[in-house]
Each structure stands twice: as structure tokens, then as C-alpha cells.
Amino acid sequence: MVLEPRTEGGSEHRDRKVWLESCAKHYGSVVALAEVELAVEDGEFLTLLGPSGSGKTTLLNLIAGMVQPTSGRIWIDGADITRVPPSKRGIGMVFQNYALMPHMTVFENIAFPLRVRKMAEAEIRRKVGEVLDIVRLPDVGKRKPSELSGGQQQRIAIARCIVYNPSIILMDEPLGALDKKLREELQLELKQLHTQLGITVLYVTHDQEEALTMSDRIVLLNHGKIEQMGPPDELYFQPRTLFAAEFLGDSNIFDGTVAGLGEFVSVYSEPGASMMARPAPIAEIGKAVKVLVRPENLTLLRQCEESGLANRLSAEMVDSIILGGVIKCYVRLSDDTTVVVQELTKAERAPPPPGSKVSVAWSAEDTLILPAVGGMTEGGGTAAA
Image (cartoon, rainbow, N blue to C red; front, side, top):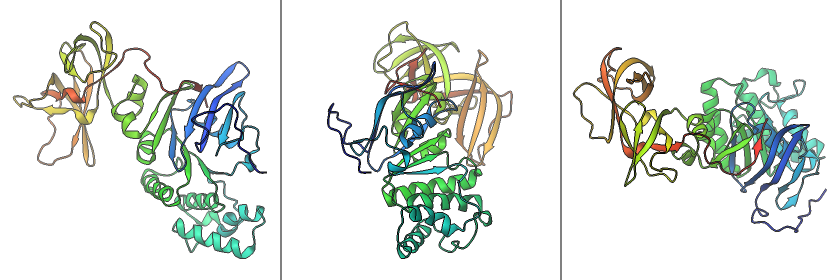
């Protein structure tokens, strides 16, 4: 089947690799997806991130053709493929459970999609050899999947996906079944493979670190809504909603009221102190807001230590946990709020013992104001997996 571009209803997204145009998906009275607009660039590594039930899998399955939208259209390379069957969309799929055929050798597993396409045997052998080299497993072709480790099986699943040169690869939590160390190794390998091949990748995960590590752009979903989308650093350093701030990375959140405007915004906080924060469009005198400070931007001060930083709160040391290269310190403010401080682990600077009087300090530049309730969202629409 040849996909012919449709030209009616011009749009700036028509030349994107993938475009979901006002796509909605209903299951009876349940709105699984509502009026989502999502454009994916050619060669982009785009991650759909969010908790269980946020809409990640629904979006992926719409693009794959596993489910049909209730309304709206799906475009790939300028062609309307909304009603095109999955096998005709030129899409590769990598699953969490590998989906390798246990009775076949590794070679035959990878060769299977080529045989379906009736490729010549000599060409099959050449292509299988090439992708085995790409995933750095050139000598396992005669083995069965059961003879490989979990990480090796996932590489073979990826090799089987890329061997027929799909223009888009969809990955549904492909590293979720692996242990932490192996998962981190394969994250880097997948990112390098993406750079090497230049294939468009749509990647589903609920792991924030995975999304921040691998993505060119993240689409954060929550309760059926596209909460925010953008580059990883934008979502981390400039979250637009409380959910985005709390889901991506650790966070300390304070309740506050805007008390003054100027070069920096003065916020009166619940712990009974004024904080200085970065300017924000939502800041209005007397308005209730949330104040975000990341743990790594806080400095833990012993008694009599000075910092010169704009913000400082007195506290009591509760506990500390060493996590290899970093240490997390938990302190309690006067209103019983627990604050987390993250610092580099240093043998010469052990954390104070529990019960010690301490302070936490941080700069105004590292203080972000967020809406107290709800907040801005980007992209409109809702989704639920």
C-alpha cells in the first residue's frame, strides 16, 4: 500500500514525522483521550512520561494502529494513516517482555520480519549480520533466546525491530524488566543507537530519570491531560504546574503568599519567613502560591555558619542517608515541614547528628513560584492509558 498525502485543511504540522490532529479516544462514557495535538519531528527521541493511567499507552497505541481514535486524524510523513492497518504503517515496536520466539534462534528471530517481506536469503544474512554488529552481539546468532541474559534479549528485540529499517520505532517501557545497573547501561546504548541511526523514536516510560536521560523532548501526561511538554531541562528547571514539579525530580514545596514585587518576588511562607523568588507571570500581591526549591539547590548550614544566600530557614536535623556520591539530609522546620537537602558526599564534612540545630539556605534564582491550585498546561487535551 502506498500512502498518499492528503492536502486539505492546511497545517504547519503537516510536514512533521508524526502528527496527532485533534485525536480523541472514548470507551463508552470513559474519555481515554480528548482532543490531543501532538507533533513529532523527524529523527526526534520523544518520551511519553507519566504515572500509570496517565495516557502514555493510549497515545502509543493510536500511533501504532492498535486502537482507532474516536475522532481526529493521525499523520505520518504527511499521509493520513488513521485507518491504515498497523502492518502498513512502517512502524517498528519494542516491548518490555522482548516478545522473542523461544523456538527460533537469535538469527531466525531477527530474520523473521525480513522473511515476511520475502527478502532474498543473501540479503537477509547481510542485514542480520549488520544489526547484530550494531547491538554489539555479533556471535550469538545460533543461540536460543533462553540462552541470553535479559539485557542481551532486549538488544535482540531492538535488532529485530531495526533490521527492516522502519521510519519510526515505538518503545513501550522496554527496559522496565531490567535491574537498575543494566537499565542505565542500555539507556546510554539506546541513546547512542538513536543518534547513529537517526530513527524517530517514541518512548513510553514512567521513570523520570530515564526520560531526563534519553529524551530530546518529553511529553508529560497526568490524569488524561498533557501537563507540559518540552526539552528535559525545561521541564526540570521550569515546571509550569505543581504536578510537573513534583513528578520530575525531588522537590521541596512551600505554601506562600506573594508579599512584594520587584527584581525578585517576595513571598511570605508558612514556616513564618519571607522568601525571595524568581519573577513569575502569576505573581500578584496577596495571591496564594506554591514555592519550589530543588534539594540540590539547598545548602545545609551548621550553627554560626554564613552563606550570603538570599533565603534562610532555621531547622532541626532529623536524619541523613548516603547514596554513593550524594547524601540526602532531612531537616524539620518550625511548622514540622520536612525539607530534603542533597549535597555531594564528602568524607571531611559529615552531616550533623539528629537533633542538631541547623539552617537551610538557598538563592532567589533557585526559587520558583508555581500556581497554588491547578496551573497552566500545554498542548490541551487529555489522555488515559
